[in-house]
Image 1 (cartoon, rainbow, N blue to C red):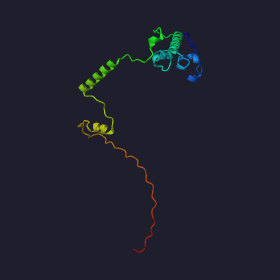
Image 2: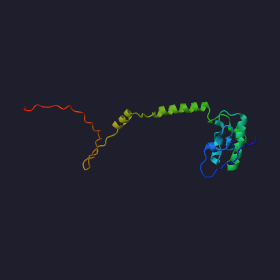
Image 3: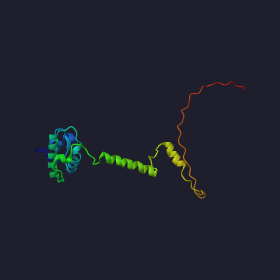
Image 4: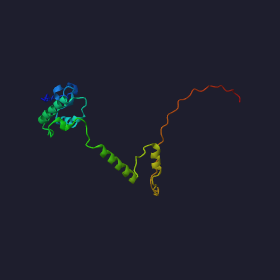
Length: 168
């Protein structure tokens, strides 16, 4: 497949993704994976298998575009075809590996007695209450005073006016 990628380096103001021409993208029809510098090319290689909804022909065009952009920006590309990059994302771990490490984590937590720490207010209060108190004397130290919180002033309520009899 023939590559459609062409370098695009607009100088001056930053260009938005919508201003970029289709020839800058690895997948020009979907406008996915723009490649305007070396870091974008490396990102397109890393995320090649994460693009959904594209045919094999579009993947081969994208690989040709990535290959051309990598050559232009001096990025080393060890893969020779798009099949080397894959069709589906893979973490390199099988389900058996994930299960094995989950079992290992459970046994480690049981052995060490660690578990998720509580972050509620009551747990924090309990922690504060169980701290070790020191037996230091406070003589010779300045006493620290705490400021009182400013309370909101109450609005005066309307009072009934009463008249009093004189002479009492």
